[in-house]
Length: 511
Image (cartoon, rainbow, N blue to C red; front, side, top):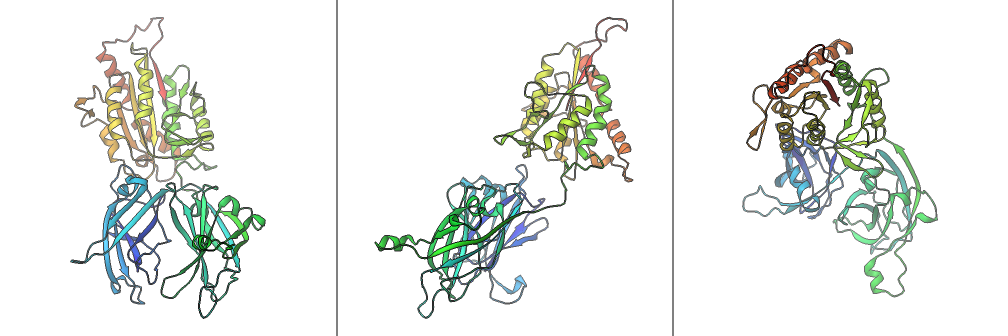
């Protein structure tokens, strides 16, 4: 039997792993329903009603989207690769959010789809994947394993499990079966480190040793535990493990072990991927973030007398403890986030990319509120604040952001949002109150202070970055003068006389 997964509208894949699918059937398939297409299948497990699948489904998780999934279960009773030739055993529907939101990210569902018949149940477990991209290759052998077969020795194989955060274990690898021997030498195998321990080198890895039986009722020989850190020592005295059978140990006073397993070799290599991140630092040209910063910043900096720009990042794990922040200074100076000129902002941005781990969700409210706090301290018309937000993600805290924008609309500030990349930015249009003024909890924004544009609409087809940046700057800055004047008029603040010795109003740009 196998399991198939169908993915239902508007999702991509990579980022979250459905770790375990165990059910009273043998295989499952997963469908991504975007007009319903199959996202993936598990392996087939023979002769069992309680399979524990090794193959995982890796999916992107978006908090703000409803990501519908359908799982179909089949019994493989034909040699054909055509699903229609298999016996349907049941199906279930859920959303990715339901799995993530369940206690311990563990969701159990009843299978249905065959009238008048109980189809069993299915269990999903999810865990966030680490960014570790290392690949481990190892080989093991065993010595003097227990004899389990009446007419022969044993047909041993190993099953690897990684521990979950809740203390349970998830299967992550099975070796091949070595027939009729108590001293097997298994073939080298390769496994992603994040599959083995999710990047946590000290996380427990449990290994079970079984004697294979044709009917699927494999005999348990024993078990041992280790960790990635121990395995990474390679062949040594530390990587010879006693295989222990708890039941036999409890029954026999002279019980020592059920054999030993030895690590013969261990090698780690990095898995390299083509750079596709929008933050990728190409040595030959600016990335989309840098282009947007430079295009807008070089124009507005002419209206900022001190040329000091507070620059913040949002959505990252910060060193040294991995704390998640949605408003952190790019220059790592919590006391003074100012960067000198737009070139200083770009330098801080590039330096920050080397230090932090980018991390969702995409929350706007914290940084809007932070700039609003500064603007609330200077409402006499001497300063006006412009917040430039550059983002590649769909906004995750829309309710809080609407509230923040409504509050900020009564202050001397404007917000420019530039969307980079291929994401759908429909929600951003709601904040750009050209047609309908933003509102929150029955309170409408006093002014329209948000301008949103997707950068992709301004990219020159010939690849001319200068032309792309000029087009972008012209449109995103077009509304700033009117927004500034609307605030001044609402507060009855008039321009100072041309010959006045008092300083002219200053625009403060926050990035």
